Length: 221
Image 1 (tube, rainbow, N blue to C red):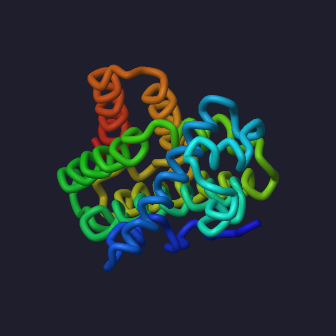
Image 2: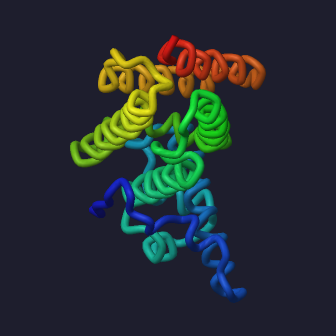
Image 3: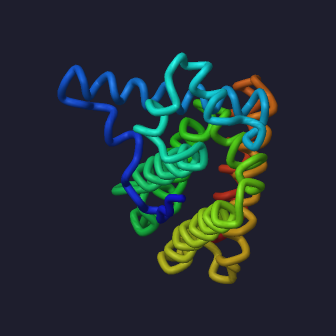
């Protein structure tokens, strides 16, 4: 079983620009295996899906599958690596926790991050569905890793809030630790609603409501 850190950058995205035709085909097949595995997980559930199901659906042999992944659990690790790396990338430079020096800059930052997270979590709803509803039942190591991602989200959000308090544009009495946890809870609820409904406008409206809370609920009056 593989083990990866939250910031591990050994991800699918790194092989999306291969330099040769053979490498391109390998990257395509890797992506096809992941897509097919997700389709099987959605139809049968993670535990009921076997390597044989994924291979048969793709028309490949077991040996071909094992050239790309150690097992079906390895697929989830790579998906989490990809997800974590994309989130970290979206929080760089202008979106870093210490980048905003005023309420208006913080407001613009919240909008940019909100748009980025919507794209990351909702462009393929199967990813969020698998991680939220199936992955915690796979094994204790994966459960611990997902809890680690939750803790990381809390810490990152607290960093934004603490910086705003220090700069004076957020309330001085703000409980940054528990407010960060509340924000994480809102984001998870938004993802669940996004999975459940195909109504993009409803998802967008919820996203903007959360952004207003992240500004008007914590700004200095």
